[in-house]
Length: 410
Image (cartoon, rainbow, N blue to C red; front, side, top):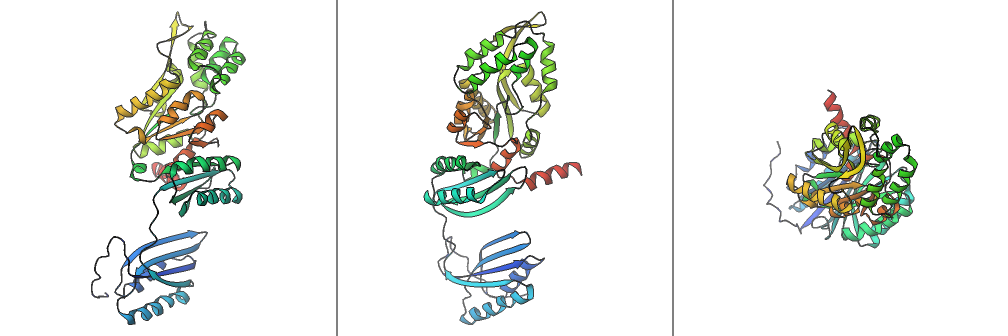
């Protein structure tokens, strides 16, 4: 066992001479162990370590204090350089002063989603980050399929500015981008509040019910205008529900049985619930359907509209207050309070104009395959048809999702 005089503890920001050792080449077992074994023979302290392996190619960098004895300097160089031929790696040694350059004020996580992700898009986004005064400190891949997801950790730029400028660049290049301020809150328990129609499920429940009344096309046209924000949601809902007068209540069971969840919906919910996330559904749809979805998926809270039923048929009327644009935002705040989760730790996902207040109220509002009006106003937009891409915005990789799923089966 090697012994030497203990090195005094470093101050928070070390300002003395330092040595950066970098090994590059084919990865193999035991490289880091061998390097640290060599370094341990010298009176120095490790300040920072970073390692990356891409397709079997290793980059390992270790920043250490300069040995205090002058003789240790040349001996360190000799010992480290000898690792090159032994391990089949290129070795570089760089001297300087102090710790790594401190990250500048303003730290953000920028996640880019592309299917496919082209170099031109990344070039434009990284250039915009530079223009906004940011520096990319680290880049890692979050997923390779069903989309390519890349996370960049950025310092020096205002996250709010990045959110606005990168959204424009992303739209021009056909990719999605999400910006979140880095900090301890990002790791806290969250509440995810979702719209249902055309978000959690494919299609609109009211149009499925309208098919039983023979007026699907007419109702669909009104729905489309309401989702674009051209009609007041509450008024449009009353008008559409009126068309359902006389539809047998059994149609609700038939519609529920025919529902198709958005690809990745179950994966997203399953993954985030493993981490203690809570879920809520806030829908302009109808309680008999939403309640059953919530039970099936293990959703913690839900709010929807109540249909009046008499004599086994729908009367064409809605009971109580309509869950409209303002009502969705109110529900989000009430659910967060009940769960004991700050509103800043909420995530809202929706696609229509009646989701905009909810998206604005949440700490992270995501327009999912949204109408252009919604996409342009939301701070974050996802335009790929996979709901589980949301987990990449939470900092979870595809490999972690698959490993957790595999462990459930073992």
